[in-house]
Image 1: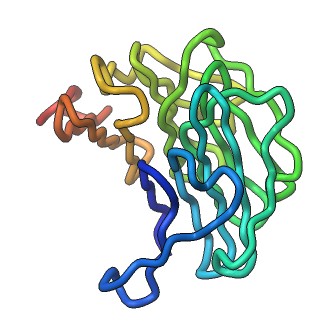
Image 2: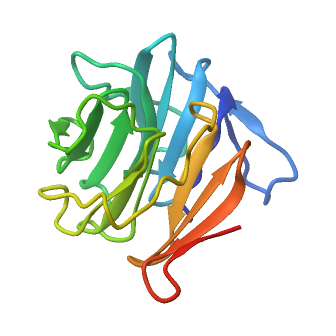
Length: 196
């Protein structure tokens, strides 16, 4: 099952390859759904929110029930990615967080620009990942202990908040999709740079 992202009102589930969709219900899932991360057909997490309030919900039975795992002192959450039942990341307004216990607790990860609104993230492994905002994209190779921001360009410039996503297929190749800029590709190998 792939990690997927859905932006809009509510969360929907398909079991027939997209022919039909059923809306999932839980407090907060009627708000804008920002990110979805499923690790199998039963277990997954959703980030949702509106008006600067964010929520994290977890299901272990394919969306029949949802457990609120919203971090305390929370603000808007834009994206989430889980690797297994315990380990994952989220990003949002003024924060990047990490969990090692399935979302029961979320630890703040220091980053070089703590006053930014982080709108999208994609990790290629539990250690290597990218997080983007309007000013640019930062990269970690050690699970968020250190970040580089000179190597990756601004892929989400002038994009609508929450309407953009980044996708990384490897540690060296990154894609960005936004309503304003279309689809962009960045590679840190030769030739270095952005292509449309």
